[in-house]
Length: 167
Image (tube, rainbow, N blue to C red; front, top):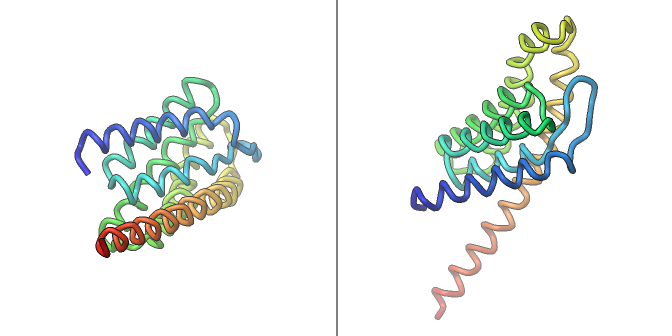
């Protein structure tokens, strides 16, 4: 894929993620569960690679915060998950690793990275125990949707290549 195509797809992912943020989120305590971000992270990880995956995660987080539909927790969580998903996929070329990277990166590492932010800004001492389950629930749901959709795309793409080869 050319850089212009990657940039365009990144912008489209950012638009979709930003526009759906106010429609598809579940408030859980001090965080907003946003499974579409994780869905987009897995798609960007597989289709675009680490750099563009992190850029779209940063862009969506920034736009959501500017619009008032996000929280400061979106930054570390989404960017760590997007990077780890893309990095693992790039090294293995297996979509299951992109799924696992998103879940571990956002659900565990991202939640741990948000702990100092929660303590500093919100004064919540036990915030870690509230962040990890919420981030895990959101990342598992969104990454599973992204994984399933990519499996369907790849199966149909392989089928189309097979049909073209028969011609």
